[in-house]
Image: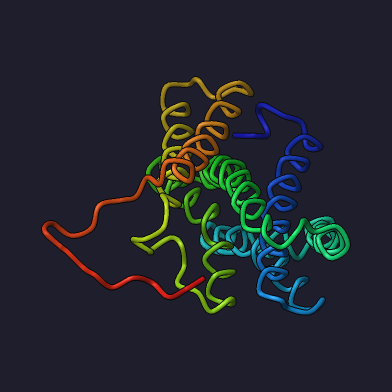
Length: 220
């Protein structure tokens, strides 16, 4: 689908942009956790490539692009080096993590959905894989950091829902033959905006009906 809208270099640039911003978010979390340089690199690679690897394996795009394109591997290394030397003050790191993570969600939910559709999946399955592409790396990052993934935490602002919105928009645009550069950008920006607004106003998904738990998460 993307190949019908953009040339190969633009497609590649979109992928690398998503990889870069997710790598930044992973590396910044490693800094906040006071990990060493190896930990920063691992977090950058896992966060940026995890969701895409899962998607490519599911749709049969093997070997995954992460193993056939050197740029996919080098980009997280560059992001890790950037964070290692130029990370913001400690008290501002979490804000930076969230902003870059929102950008990654927006880019990956779009590219993940379109790539899955290109490989013959239906619109619903494509949107689901778009969601998995967007949140998969973040889940792996949180697990490695010994935190309950934001994806399933009731005490965290909406995380998966913005990616679901972006992926669903792409699927609808495909369904009604409206997918183009502008609508792709609209879907990505909508995902980013919903995520940032959720963080700003602390929007959270509802828990089980009449559930009243006093237990709070101890994760930092």
